[in-house]
Figure 1 (cartoon, helix red, strand yellow):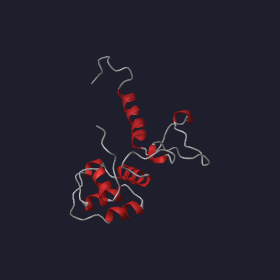
Figure 2 (cartoon, one colour; figure 1 turned 45 degrees about the vertical axis):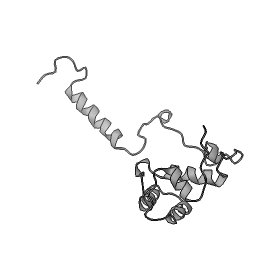
Figure 3 (spheres, rainbow, N blue to C red; figure 1 turned 120 degrees about the horizontal axis):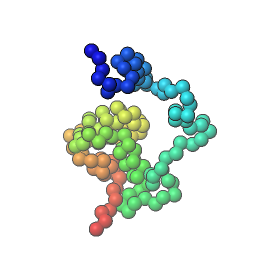
Figure 4 (cartoon, rainbow, N blue to C red; figure 1 turned 90 degrees about the horizontal axis):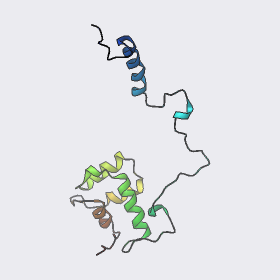
Length: 137
């Protein structure tokens, strides 16, 4: 069957381009020969940049919270999947393990009551004995 002029490269070249593209799509790494197109990793002597109040030791904690509470809540939010809520302790622990959470965080959540259900990260933080922000009215 012939092409009606809508294809500028022809079917043989199309097949060749598809084969080339398949390698790029299936690769689990960069495949470009030119370095300008690849992201440059940070250097070994450069610190990892982390932004936010939880990572700033000089930032004051919100009203109703301590610095430790802010850090724990931030770590929980980072390692708990959003789809896990509402969740019991077993679901929280499963999510933390899948997300490779620190052992200290897993240990804290392990101490929670097994049958209690938590609707969000704020409830988990509160159950761990940390305060949450006072509501602004």
